[in-house]
Image (cartoon, rainbow, N blue to C red; front, top):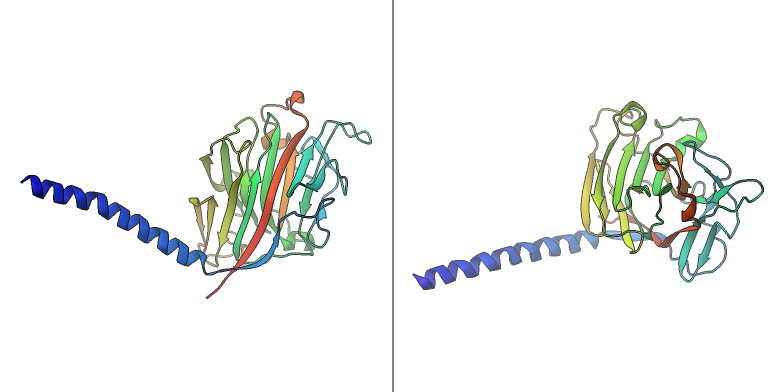
Length: 272
């Protein structure tokens, strides 16, 4: 009897390990099907690489408090192997708060594949860093949210340990209370680097923090109102202050300056 119990106990310990190893092997094989198509490891100090990145400039959206500057190193620079987006309360040219938003429109487009960004976030009441994509069509007359929006990572400083992924379309968006998204509690993302990623297929999107998948959005196959994601998008990295979400509990003036560190950006295509 003791031998039988021991035997089954051994099996109960072995089978989970076999399953975990099988899952790990499957994941490794899946990862092996990704082909790197472009990347920025932020190894050249100075301004971000102009062959990849352009700038938003001014007060752009969401009634945010920051003025986005263009080609100003105090707000966007490469330093010690990281891209740093810095929000400052410096009253530059009469703008009380300055920051940066850089994007790949017209230089790097993405249609399906894996996009991953390794980053350490700023924090403090009022911060709103993001990694996200917009459909190129927004620059050609298609209005938001019909163009499609893919939010790979969003975080608001008044809720610092929670990271969000969201999508916005004509049918599903926050403006009408139907946005699709999920969130995950993360251990101090303002003190640690994590890899934020989306795997984008014709039939679904899967969102990850490191290796943890925490959101899936599926193509309902009923038109562009729910799936405008069969057209190229461009990538945006920005540090907003205040605004409709980030400023819901005000802005703490004592937090500045705040730095958003991006270690790398990698974009992959699927290999069949």
